[in-house]
Length: 251
Image (cartoon, rainbow, N blue to C red; front, side):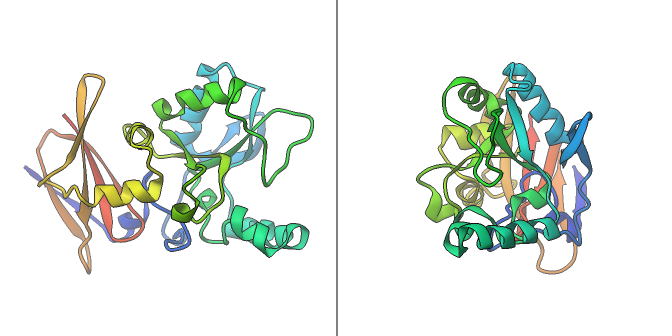
C-alpha cells in the first residue's frame, strides 16, 4: 500500500468539481490549462483534455462545420458582462433562468461548452441544438467521450438552471456513462457517490475489459487529506469543490 497526500487546494480541482449557486468556482486556486478548440479560430477556449475529446467527438459524429462551439471558458469579468447585458435586454427573470451568476458558472472551469447547429443566425444565450439530425447523433455519442447534457428538461429544480439542450459538460469516463444510464444530473451524481465511501463500499461498474471502482472520500476538516491505495493501482482523483474527493480506481 502507498499513502497519497491530497492538499486542501486539490478539493477545488479536477474534472468532477461541482460548480453552481451553492458552490462557486475557486479561480484563486484553480489554474486551468486552456487551449483553443479550433487553432484557426482561437475565440473559444476549453480545458486541454476536454477540448481534445470534444474535437474527437465532433470528428466521430462527422459534424465538423455543422456543429460549432458558441462559448467555452469564460472569466468572471466576461460572465458578469453577459449577466448584466442579459438583464438589460431580457430582464432579470429570464437572466436568472438562463445565465449563471458570475463566479457560479460552469464556464469558469473550462470544462463546459455551449454548442449550436451551424446556421446563419445563432442566439448566443440560447443557441439552437435540436434532438434530431446531426445534433442528435452527437448526443448519442457524447457520454462515450465523457460529456453530459448538463441541464436537461425536468431537472430544473435540482440544477437551479432552466433546460439548456445546448450546454454540455465534460466529466470523463465512466462518470458520463453512469449519469446517462441512471438519468442523473451532476448534483444527483455527487449525492449518489456520497453513499459509496472510499475503501468501504465503492460503486463498481464495468467499462471495456476493466472495472471502475468509484467512491467518495471526505476531506479532513483542516490540512491535508490522506488516502491509502494499492501500490500499483491505476487511479484518478478529483475534488468535488465542497467537502471531499471522488476516487476512481481501475481494476
